[in-house]
Amino acid sequence: MLKNKVAVVTGGTRGIGYAIVKKYLENGAKVVLFGSRKETVDKALASLREENPAWEVEGAFPNLSDAKAVADEIAAIGRKYGRIDILVNNAGISDSTPTIDCAPEHFDEVLGLNVSAAFYAIQPVVAIMKEQGGGCIINTSSMVSKFGQPSGVAYPASKFAVNGLTVSLARELGQYQIRVNAVAPGVTRTDMVAKLPEEMIKPLVARIPLGRVGEPEDIANACLFLASDLAGYVTGEVLSVDGAMMV
Ligand code: NAD
Image (cartoon, rainbow, N blue to C red; front, side, top):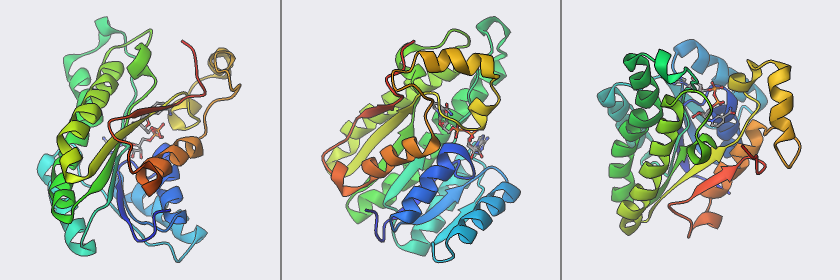
């Protein structure tokens, strides 16, 4: 479904991002995954190459808080491959620190990675996509962007912002044939969720009509659809992938 497309996936070393990278490779894309450290990037690359040595995948670890470092890396990828068709802004941190205890610096850190870093990657990618006549950007939102959460505002505020970025950018960039969408995962089985004790998981599952938490591959499947030509007329959409979880 993505034959010969070039994709960049941030936070691609584990969890949902890793599943997206794998799904894209399985569907013929060439992928550059971003991680926060060389060791985790190398580990992810080794495991992907072990799975299929023919997959065209490489990694980088620009500091996502540094707009110039991100722009330089994206420009280098554009030069090397001659294009970038897909950007998935997946890197993110969750947080539920009660508002009263949340240091302003911590609030900024969550907004910084979940929103500003996405913008830093979008800007240079848009320049390349505009030049080549189109492309596709997928941001990672969350179900908290619909309902908020019981404790902590930084994470939901950041994901509401991701939705705003997505919908507004779709309007701005449609004229260049650049589609911009988001996926909004529900509770998904990654390190973020693995940290939760079983007594917290059980009541969560009870509120999910499909009767299970999501798997990273569920989110990757949605990202495959959004990146593919099947979604050629879909833009400005925040696609919930949450088993219709009720708050
Ligand atoms: P995860 O913690 O397993 O992986 C997060 C990824 O982000 C990693 O690859 C990590 O390297 C990268 N990352 C984290 N901090 C970074 C930093 N400072 N610089 C660069 N990279 C950094 O998380 P996940 O569950 O796979 O989440 C991926 C995305 O999905 C996030 O945006 C998250 O908010 C969203 N999400 C997850 C769930 C869930 O239940 N797991 C639910 C809703 C939304």
